[in-house]
Image 1 (tube, rainbow, N blue to C red):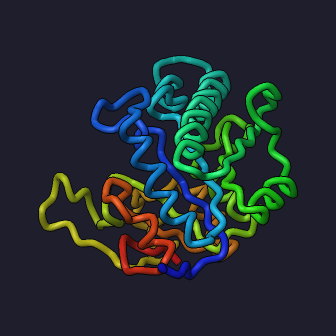
Image 2: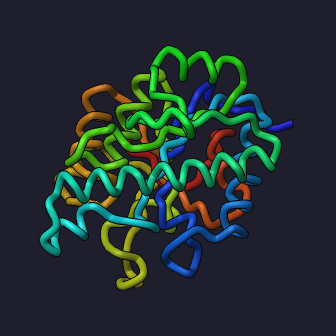
Amino acid sequence: MNKPVYKRILLKLSGEALAGTQGTGINNQVIAQIAQDVKSAFDTGVQIGVVIGGGNIFRGVAASAQGMDRASSDYMGMLATCINALALQDAFEKAGIPTRVQSAIEMAEIAEPYIRRRAIRHLEKGRLVIFGAGTGNPYFTTDTAASLRAMEINAEVIMKATKVDGIYDKDPKKFPDAKKYNEISYIDVLKQGLQVMDSTAISLCMDNKLPILTFDMGVAGNVLKAVCGENIGTVVK
C-alpha cells in the first residue's frame, strides 16, 4: 500500500477544474474523476482539507473590471464557491469519503459555519473538510483563503492542483522553450511575477514557511503521487 509522507494537507482546487473542457458550470464526469483521485489519496490515511474556487460560475474580479462594485462582486464569487463545495461534497460522498462543508459565510441549512477547532476535529475523525466562501471577506482570493486555512488547520503543505504540470518561467502553451522548475523559492516567484498564486497568498506562505506543491490535476493518480512524495510538479519553498 502507498504510504503518505504528509499527515495533513490542504488541497486547492480551482473552480475551472470542475468545468472540464466546457469552461463554465460543473461537469459531472470531471467532478467524479476528481473524487476518485482524491479517494485514492484519502485511503492512504492522510487528512485532507479542500479549498475550492468559484471561477467556473462567477469571477468577482472580472465583474469588478466591468464596472460592478468590487465588494458585491466578490461576495457573489464567494457564493459560487459554496455551490462548488456542495457539488464536491456530493461527489466525494458517492466515492465513499465522509465529508463536511464549512462556510466562511453563515448558511446554516447547507453548511457548518467555519470553526477552526471543529474543522481540525473533523480531520482527526477521518473526515474530509471542504472550506467554502473563501475567507469570508471581499478583496481576498481563494488562493489567500487556501493559505490561511492551511495554516489554521496546521497543514504541512498546500497542494495547488492546476491545468499545468508545474511552474514554468513563461507560458508553456505559448512558448515551446519554456523552462520548468522542479523547485523555486517564494521570493523568485514574487520577483518574476509567476502566476502560481496571488502575491498575498505567496507572502503568507513565505512568512510561515509553508511549502506549496503545484501539479497537473488532469492526470489521473497525481493526487496520490503528490501525497506519497513522488517527484511531480513544482515545489515552492
